[in-house]
Every structure is written in C-alpha cells, then in structure tokens.
Amino acid sequence: MPIVVRIDVQLARHKMSVGEFAERVGLTPANVAVLKNGRAKAVRFSTLEAMCRVLDCQPGDLLEWTED
Image 1 (cartoon, rainbow, N blue to C red):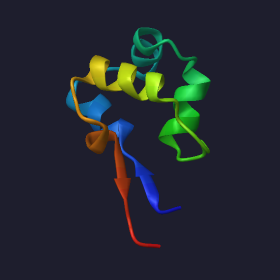
Image 2 (spheres, helix red, strand yellow; image 1 turned 180 degrees about the horizontal axis):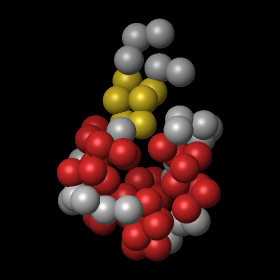
Image 3 (cartoon, helix red, strand yellow; image 1 turned 45 degrees about the vertical axis):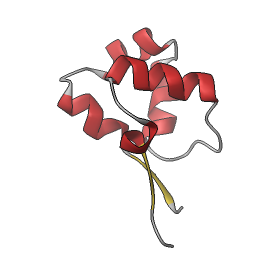
Image 4 (cartoon, rainbow, N blue to C red; image 1 turned 90 degrees about the vertical axis):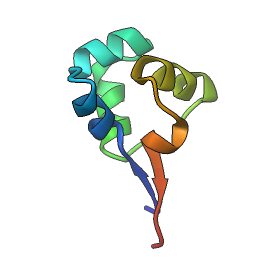
C-alpha cells in the first residue's frame, strides 16, 4: 500500500499509550490498531483532525505517500 501510517512515531514522540490516544481521540483501541497497522481503507476528516489535535501535529506527520 503506498500510504504509510506513522501514528506509532507520533505516539512515541508524545510518550502516549494506544489506550490513552484512543480515549482522547474517541476511537476504540482496536480501531487505532487498524489505523496503525495500515489496514484501514479510509479515515474520516473528523478523525484525522482529532488525531492531529491530540498529537499536536499535521496530517503529513501521520500519513506518508510512498512509491509502490
């Protein structure tokens, strides 16, 4: 998949657990795992906005396009 999800990098940078992140964003830990592992087919803008707010980052810090 040419889109790489970098949530784990931001979580480590903020020393935040998946559980805390999930709670603050309003997702289940299972859904965060789906996002982290690159298995998600789509992300709502409202979810992306919440993730950026919680992690104080830009969407490009969480998602990266790579050549296939």
